[in-house]
Image 1 (cartoon, rainbow, N blue to C red):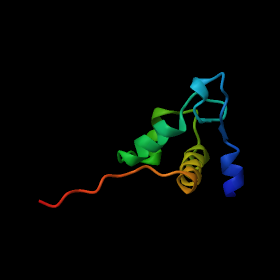
Image 2: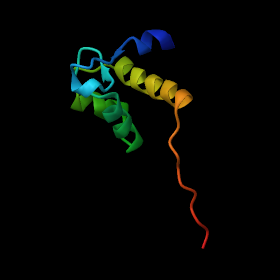
Image 3: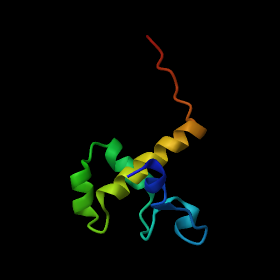
Length: 82
């Protein structure tokens, strides 16, 4: 599946979920899935916890996060060396 096809699985509707990006057809935020992955959850565990999702939905969240990282960045403070 191409990146463009994956990104079509994400929607932003101001009338749903406060306008946050969600997986199309669900009220599951992209950020929730990315947070779960960042915390070490496996794709298989996410699919078990959210049985309506597919592997492609999770991949779409990653693709969306990647696109956002191209457009914006988060300042990460440098650690001070003591």
